[in-house]
Image 1 (cartoon, rainbow, N blue to C red):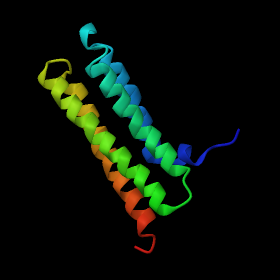
Image 2: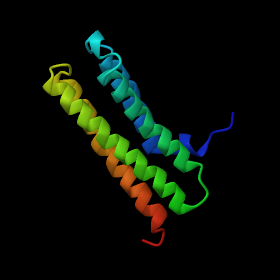
Image 3: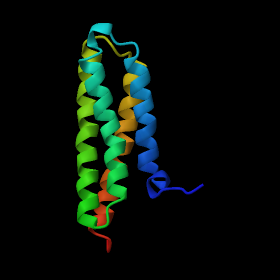
Image 4: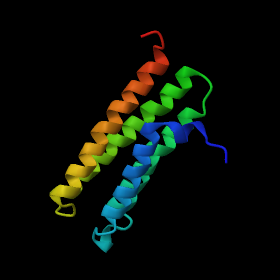
Length: 122
């Protein structure tokens, strides 16, 4: 079976794992939040890996970097919403630690990927 370039990217695989984690965590959110925070968090986390995927398919470095930048923005959005959810008592400390650790790793890899594409000589 053919393997797409996105499947070879460690940052895409980590962001996909984060999406699964967030989906699992949000299963325990209040049912009243189904169309609120749950929906917003899930859309944001899926946007992270979706924009990495789209960027990996683009031909120009500038275009690729744009999608990696959008992905980074979505990642920070996930962090913001996770922190709000923690303050509301919907997320336990261990889940917050897991998500934050994943976000730090993904953000660093996204920045390296973006910078490498824009500055291949360095």
